[in-house]
Image 1 (cartoon, rainbow, N blue to C red):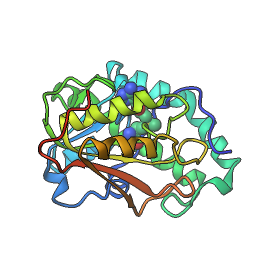
Image 2 (cartoon, rainbow, N blue to C red):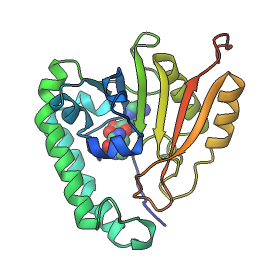
Image 3 (cartoon, helix red, strand yellow):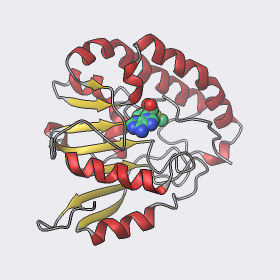
Length: 235
Ligand SMILES: C[S@@+](CC[C@H](N)C(=O)[O-])C[C@H]1O[C@@H](n2cnc3c(N)ncnc32)[C@H](O)[C@@H]1O
């Protein structure tokens, strides 16, 4: 077994983890990026420190930074405990141990919370949720979705995944999703049928190996982009 979670949890990753999970190149960082379901990740805050801009969307941005920290505290010890109890399910190369993982998640949360109120005012953190986002078509070059789609395959069904991916493709030129495993370390059953539908609709889908792994075997990212100009709309 790997992780048992009743709900989607607000745990966040750093800029460096996003860079590795999504194979983000230097030039990608200058593109128009949206992080969907960014939660308390520090990607947005760290990009801001580098003089770059990301828009993050998540339903928890309705709450205050304090509320989000409380939600994190409520689930965090139990998650780290589950990780400690299943050592064989994890790859300890990026995070070197459960304690190291714990410290990285707390650091990301702290960076996020100190940026959140300002970022909200600047329109970098917006409340919203898949499968319907409040942006015009092709507002972004890249939509990133980390640790939500595929990971929570037992919580969200195939139709939700399909609608969510097509929505991200509506607002962005390309979509990158990581990881492809669910919480029990199984490859999500939605991947193959989704690829079939996307390819039928004229999209190119690539599964890329990436230099980031925490779930054992979870080092692949899905990259989707549009190659056909005259594709049929999937509705
Ligand atoms: C495990 S966290 C991942 C946070 C961040 N992407 C990262 O990898 O560090 C999952 C996030 O997805 C958000 N979420 C849950 N349902 C969502 C939905 N329908 N649309 C967008 N975000 C959602 C949660 O609020 C939570 O912050």
